[in-house]
Length: 254
Length: 290
Image (cartoon, rainbow over all chains, first blue to last red; front, side, top):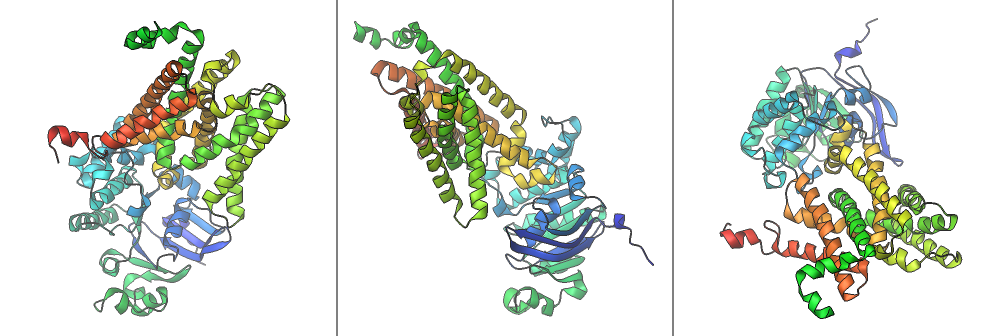
């Protein structure tokens, strides 16, 4: 009998269920991702995409099932800074009085002492991260004065500074300019080569085809999961979106 | 004679200082204002204005019961302050009633209980000083308590300054990197209850919420940096307290009301003339910058 080495999986979610005060948001969902894999999370609004992210980060508790991150519990993944979460633009108060540098520094908080005093290495990590997303000219710009794309890159830099091996991105391409979109897709290739695991939710079917190795179609539970080329079919997409044809949703090209 | 001395600014400020009760009031109110102002940045950014209102009103029965039992009033107030929030959370979770409705009905319930208790427990409790504050008649034991609580809150906020900012800004990220969000939530609530307790001595239960939100709101209009926001908030709170007490001394006005009015005027000034976010944008006016 072949035994599975769970250490090989960065993310291993088994039959997870999440409910909010008795209302089921997600049930019997499975996901297994290895290092260097990019997986697209596709579903309607309210299909449980954000809930899935919340379960993986430990922001909500699962009522059933099991989640292993690098073979360990979610709790120890939090302690080890394993997972970084890049929020969607609507999830952030853009008027908060904080600048780019301080947001990115928040990526280091988990590994600092209780007063969150940055060490030399933290400062360096933040500098490098900001450079990678091309925001060096905006170190002290308040996030309220940034464009949507620049703000998105700020939060991406926070994830980079955290040195997480798993990146969860909620709608990374929504509301960003062409330049940011290009920069993000280049970073994805780099992350993949560095062996990071990426799970991203998106509405844009073209992005899924472009850089997702795997795709997870959900509608409260997993509709289909596997290699993008095999699973990302018009039939599956139609099922995921409750019977609406992909032609109608995304135009005849897709 | 009185009018003459009033006309010079110097004696306007120094004359009241001859009175022991005025020196005490100015010092204690400044301390209380500083504490409330510090917390205020967090509450306004977290969107807890209504929560602040709820907690500050809910401490009423706690104050009354503590006085009746001869306990430190802060203890009773703290118990009911945190209790009200727990009750709000419980009712919200177990019923379909919306959150703002639950908050409204819980705190008015507690407040009503407090008023009924005052009328029943015929002791030396002065309802007026609880409702409207009495910084001029603060007792020595109250002074000690206030200093102790104020220091406690300032120390807690200072230690967890950055964590609380992260909690207000992006709790999901805080949780993801292993920061105890549950602890921070209750830490902020605890500080809120304690600040409400010390604040009510200055301006009374009814107006204490102003101490907890107005300085933060003023500062929010004046800066884009969190640290500056805290500093401005604390300073504007202290200045309002001093102005309020002086005005109430010279014109024989209700002290708590004067302090809060001073805060409101400072807010209105920022609202109209703040360099970036004010209606008239003073900076543009002076520099022609667009």
